Image (cartoon, rainbow over all chains, first blue to last red):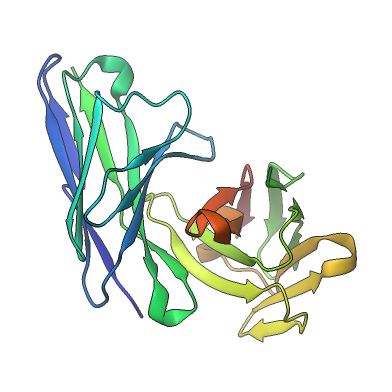
Length: 116
Length: 115
């Protein structure tokens, strides 16, 4: 089946620094990718919709200047958490839409971010 | 606005028991997709099934089966003869086709299968 790869799987960074998470669709082209955040024992919260070649669409309450999303190619979207703070520590997971397979949404493995 | 409700937050069963996870959704769309995903403790989301709103046939895949009832806006999931490896959080999701198929998730149901 289709594979979406996310990197890194986990990252620890110092408060005030920026960290980039990559999301790649490995065997299909994804014009649309999505970024979610998940707090412990909670459901996934959509942060933004990433469209190849255009600006991301952010959900209400998500700071676009803090969570920078770039979708430069049909197989890669990146999420950069800028000036990270401990409250940004969370599980971030991306997904990609496979338009050639009935618009099925496949998810990456997720990235655990810890800000110390 | 779309909404997905998974009323059961946690279900605990003994191995080999059957377990049914409920999912009720709300949408004004006439065409939509419904999904089930499994999230094991490691965190990744595993795709289980996608169902088109026009296809109300029930589906069986091994020990998994799904019952789609459009009249009651439900898309329930049953695990037959549960195994310890089935322990995970299961999410039901509804796609918003007009919004590029972004998913609205239910709150998830944690399934604990005891040996």
